[in-house]
Amino acid sequence: MDRLQAHRQFFAKLITANAGIAPGSDLEAALASTPREEFVGPPPWKIFTRSGYVESPTDDPALLYQDVVVSLGGEGPFNNGQPTLHAFCLAALDVKRGERVVHVGAGTGYYTTLLAKLVGETGVVDAYEIEPEFARRATKNLAEFSYAAVHDRSGTEGSLPECDVLYVSAGATGPLDVWLDALRSKGRLLFPMTAADGAGAMLLITKQEDGGFAARFLLQAQFVPCVGARDEGTAQRLSEAFHNSGWAKVKSLYRNDAVDESCWFSGDGWWLSTR
Image: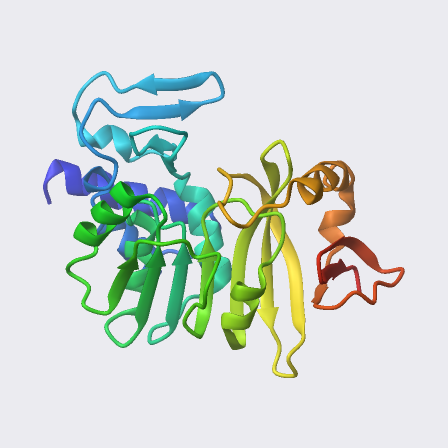
């Protein structure tokens, strides 16, 4: 084993352990076999901190195998997100071999690659990326997976393929109809529901066999905005809603306007219930 591969394997074990995933998982293997340096552009790499970005002191890729957020370069705060957060989310989605996955906000394709490895050759992955340069890089990075396609358009409009898993990597103010309509029975949608200040939590929605939707928040998170999936009025109200602990009590989603006393938060044509 060479030095860099040793770093990758330790990174994979560390990230999955931090996310509460048992050793020897498919996700651990996917992390260990995916060179992060190929997705974040050339050095010096910019590592995100609460005080801004810090540049890497050398061009050693081993620096990338930490639980850190790394800039993808270009204009705007676009990043390769925190590995432990994404590992926790992918585990919650319980991605299985042979499933069809839609990834909205694929960036340069790092986490899309992990999804492709999880579903395997019997699965299908459709990735959507609105930034042309990122979509080009993602297409190159995913070229080895014949069953994965990158679409250089928004994943918030038009129609999406019917799927088992829909993973959104940018902050929305609510579940879009186009996302909910794409879910098969027992399909899972996971997206960051974020407020005006960018803070919020990851909302997991599961389509039930009777057509209803179970829903629960997994953990707090902060993401860049999802273009086409935000309403500023809703975002302002979410800022107030997330200030109390009620979000942790959410158990279901309803797609109508008949709100009752169990409502934690409502949007246009949907609401989240604590029952």
